[in-house]
Length: 457
Image (cartoon, rainbow, N blue to C red; front, top):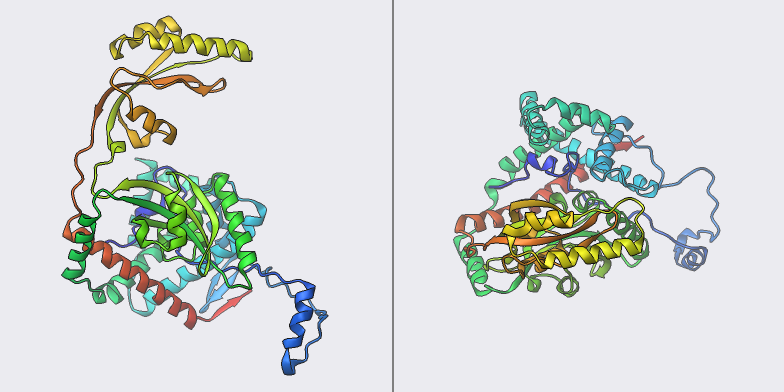
């Protein structure tokens, strides 16, 4: 059984991209104008409310202090600040002031859920020991900071967070895992027939395309649709500026995939709602689309990857490449740069295979970098097809800029991927079980929220 793991707290490429609770954020920015208020006054019935209401005190529901008391446990402003700092660091500081207010509200909700999970574990007499938390903390530190885990303490403090904040998050993670293993996992069953049906469907679909999609879903009613769409557009704007899709999905998505960063996994278009399938069919890997309307709300989608079912993907080929590049002197004119590129391109055409690269590159004033273990899918999307269509000894067209230099890639070898085998029985069963556990876990958390006494300060 595969449950949410602590290693996901830090992705390999960003040490602070922490896994926050997969809690949905509800659209809060509803809007109404004076004319609507006047029209609605006719439907007030026995309340007989005036159309022009003047509040006799400050009452702004969108302004709330960032502290709460959850069944007697105090969540402080510092707790919120330190957790927000982790999210901001994960997004490389690219969070606008408008987005920050929504982020703080969501982080507070995450902290509330985390507290409820820890409290429920204690109520169920499930212990999370300090030793368990420390072991997990050290493991995460070692994964991201090598042989010097102490560097993580300094890193967390440098971004405005603290080791205590991360350890509290780890405690909540462990507590929730233990609760699910005892109270939900034993009661989830997947029959052999269900697994065999999935395997048969995969075999029948061999060669058809499937898509790995990320989603951020925001629910909306007819009354809140406009404001929810505005919120979704602000999220898209942050993502286009470099924000982490997974982090925003965890913070804001109301789909069941929020807990895994919005990752839908590999799906066939036939299994998706019509609106999502129509959009996904036209997308290219790495493309972000949205927001677009679907029944019940608004959707933002990211096409992570695309492949053919049970078919070897050419992009899994391992390539041997030589990169030949030239740099430009500072302040070079456009005409001079163009002439230099033209000379470089003509010179590259004269290279007779990989064994001739170093000698010809020297004559061109170019540098050479060799890499014999490049997976095609690791290349930028614009280069993948160009390189895969090369024969050994051929080069790509020149690419680059005056600032970064101009280069070509020469293919010196290629090991094609082996045929993809059908997933085994156990892996399919684990996937089906995980899906059912996650759905029940969401209901479990909703029940904890409903029964909690929460006071905002």
